[in-house]
Length: 255
Ligand SMILES: Nc1ncnc2c1ncn2[C@@H]1O[C@H](COP(=O)(O)OP(=O)(O)OP(=O)(O)O)[C@@H](O)[C@H]1O
Ligand SMILES: [Mg+2]
Image 1 (cartoon, protein in one colour):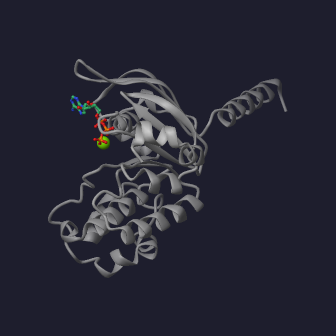
Image 2: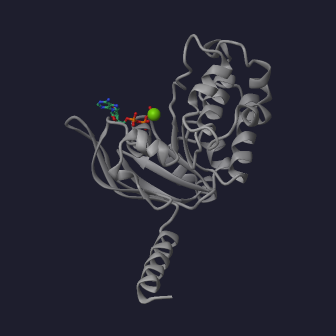
Image 3: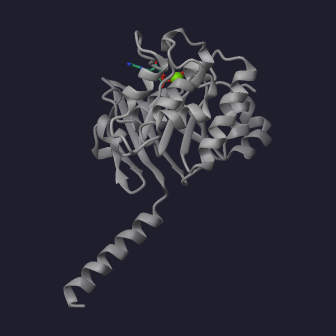
């Protein structure tokens, strides 16, 4: 082995170590604006691979804006800070590049495409075949979708549409799943069904951030929690700490 090779091996070892040292998701002092409106005001958070983070806070606290900032959509505009996912600098990327790096945002309105069946909604999502899940794998996890594969997506019930939105994200080789109010408007029994699926996905090593008004449900599912107020993190710790802390729950979550 010559000196050059040894040196380049050492470099890659050092780089590999640095990648290991940085948490799987690392958000550092992120600031974002809608035009002149300063909304995301210096958010930092970290999450190890395969864990679930509950991102909580009152209406207007900046939860959706933070998910949108992480997903690198144009609005709000990121003006400062770093977002690292599995060693990749998302803060230097556009939305489509962040998606290619494994970040998938499931927005509150679920974005099921009108005029397409369940199956078409799924297959259209697959940008690079052979990477994310196959349609059959999605159907295995979501038997309700399999039964309705030829039904128009927008005619599904709310819970089924949420399953379709999550299934569609899984067809895109997801590393980090961002869920904005996935339980909104759903009956408790459907919430339980989705919780079960999210835990199965977790076992497969997928990392998730869940934003929820149903804070108790999100905290029971999550490993970690952050609480937002006026675009800032006011608490960061384990989900259990929040469940056990009455004052915190009362002050910021009204539960
Ligand atoms: N497109 C926009 N332009 C200007 N301001 C916006 C825009 N979208 C959101 N905001 C403002 O940013 C703040 C945070 O909103 P955001 O939707 O992130 O809150 P949230 O925590 O998700 O609230 P909720 O629980 O009601 O969904 C609010 O004051 C909101 O009015
Ligand atoms: Mg919101």
